[in-house]
Amino acid sequence: MVHDGQDAWIVDPGDAAPVFQALETLGLQLRGILVTHHHPDHTGGVAQLHAATGARVYGPARESVPEPLRRLIQDDTVDVLGHTFVVMDVPGHTAGHIAYYCPAFEGVPLLFCGDTLFSGGCGRLFEGTAAQMQISLASLTALPGNTRVCCTHEYTLSNLRFAREVEPDNAALAAYQIHCQSLRAQGLPTLPSNIALERDINPFLRVSQATVAASAQRFDAQQVAQHGVFATLRTWKNQF
Image 1 (cartoon, rainbow, N blue to C red):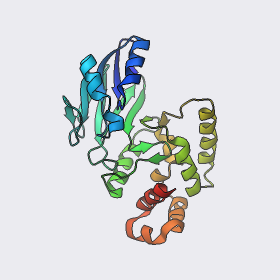
Image 2: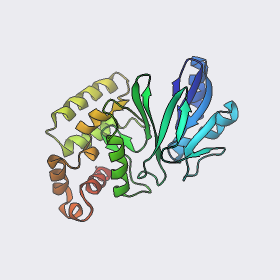
Image 3: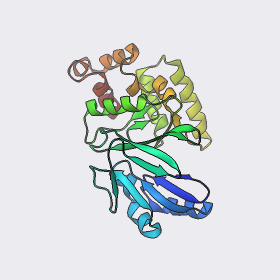
């Protein structure tokens, strides 16, 4: 959720109840809903929230999302509390997945990337291909390093265990894992992350690194030869 003390926008509300609770606690009026993709854990609360508040709903043009909906494609823009978010097409997790990027939200770039990029990982390939996901992640990786990465699941510790298997000698990754373990032990989220950090610790953004490629080769050299390092990493992570 983002808000200005009066009005609020919510991203990917899979459940309406916690949104209603937050609105009441903070005394906010819901004005808009941003949806990144059609999975029910991201859209389950949309219809109820819209019916109760009249909030406008924005989402991917090529996916089935509860109506009424303004359908968005690459380079469309959405005004959120006076800030312009640009739509990015990022297929892979689903065929029509989109992300929302604001170059300066309260002075810092902000990204809502749904299930495309996670801290230390990426989404499963339910509908798209490994090639599509790799291109999508490359477009996110090209954003400014201080871009806040607001993904929609707290999968960080699980992702980092896999990342350490891929790059056991990555010092930045080891330090980040300790940091995240400390946060979770205190009941705190590891998110948001940022693009610069993900470039250093996320194996799915580091497939050109010799250490990552060598680990993929050890896991399945034949698959690397046929489908590449990225696809091999995704297969490995699915089984991890």
